[in-house]
Image 1 (cartoon, rainbow, N blue to C red):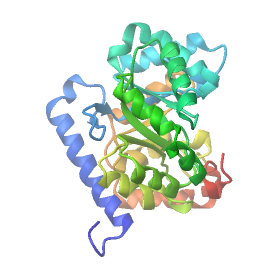
Image 2 (tube, rainbow, N blue to C red):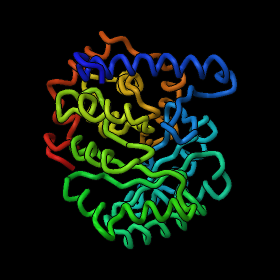
Image 3 (cartoon, helix red, strand yellow):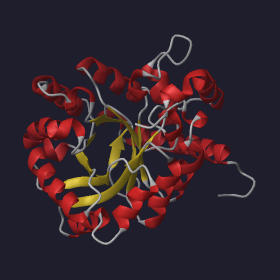
Length: 317
């Protein structure tokens, strides 16, 4: 990082340049044929749309297969080309619903899932289950799920740890790229990406971030410097972001994160209508001004701990 440039300035300058340059490239050449602008997913070679579908909300609930399949199909119809899930979502339900769609539409999306097991053998067993549930012979991205503490990393990188499973799966062609995810404590994830050359990082980013264990101030600049594919999550904080006297629209919540130097954001949707609203926001996105970004951050300050309930200082999750 350039001397005498604060982390806030680094992120703001990088974000403005990234958003403007990448959106210009997309709209300058391919926008007429695309439902949404796109950005590079780090060094993977994948051009990911600004809005991506998360495998939670309706997609992880038992008894919602028809509603879930409708959401997934509609997302792909609208141009969503990245779908994220996890073996732990709904104890495998999310992967099953997504797999029902992948039987006919696998080649239309970049498919990502996760292992919450910290051992090699346990993770490889989960991978077999994930591939079967998702009805595919390979993943585009396999990620370490919710790495929260230093002890997690010690287990992952120990002999017989999960990192061995990730490397073996990539060598055997079962997965193409490897990632790490988390929303609890930024320094743990920073240690993770310094220990291993991951391709992507999925991190919690929202307008309350700067007030509670800020990922924007500490982790995001390092991820940018490493040119990781950066995926933002927890944008609406399961609805806790929205207050009458605070942020009160999904447009503000999502555009705040999209103005940062991220590749895409993932959001779980309860209904097709929510999905369509999110896609419209992404399609019409324009980077926010510095003044607007600070305004949104200021609005969240009185309830920042609740809007970042998944953080260490927010009580954890």
